[in-house]
Image (cartoon, rainbow, N blue to C red; front, side, top):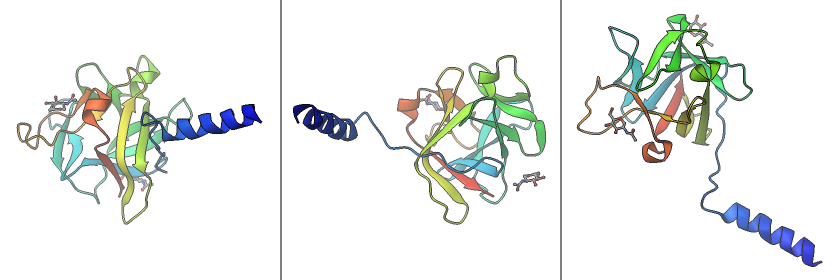
Length: 168
Ligand SMILES: *[C@@H]1O[C@H](CO)[C@@H](O)[C@H](O)[C@H]1NC(C)=O
Ligand SMILES: *[C@@H]1O[C@H](CO)[C@@H](O)[C@H](O)[C@H]1NC(C)=O
C-alpha cells in the first residue's frame, strides 16, 4: 500500500512541478508556414542569406516544413527555393544549401503551448529550437530593433514562447 501511495504522490508532484510545462507539436509537416511574433514574422534579407523581421503576412508563407533525419524534428526550407534551409550558422541563422555539413544544423524542434487550428493559426506560444546547440529562434519585438532587424538565435528561456505559427 505504501509503495502505491508513494508512486501516486510522486506522479502528482511531477505533474505539479513548475519546471514541467505542457507542450504540443503542431501538425506542420508538409505544410507551408509563416513564423511570427506579434505583428512581425521571419523573412529573408534581400542581400545575403540571413533572416530579418518583416510585417506579418499570414497568407504568404516563407517556409516549407520537411521531415528531417530525426523523428519529430523538422527542416525549414525556403518556400521559393527548397534547396535552401534554415541553418544554425553560428551567430545568426541563415538560409543555406541542404544538406549542411552537420545535419543537426538544419534540424529544428517546434514546441508550442497551444496546438490550435483556427483560421491559419496552428501553433501558439511556440519555441523553435536548434538541435545543434539548443538555442531558439528570436524575432525581436523590442522598440530598439525595428522591422528589418536580424532574426537571431538566443537563450530559449530569455526569448520565451513568443512564436506563433500560421499555415498559409
Ligand atoms: C508550398 O509552396 C510551394 C511553392 O509555392 C507550392 O509548390 C506547394 O504546393 C505548397 N505546398 C502546400 C502544402 O501548400
Ligand atoms: C533577440 O534579438 C534582439 C535583436 O536582434 C536582441 O537585441 C536580443 O538580445 C535577442 N534576445 C535574446 C534573448 O537573444
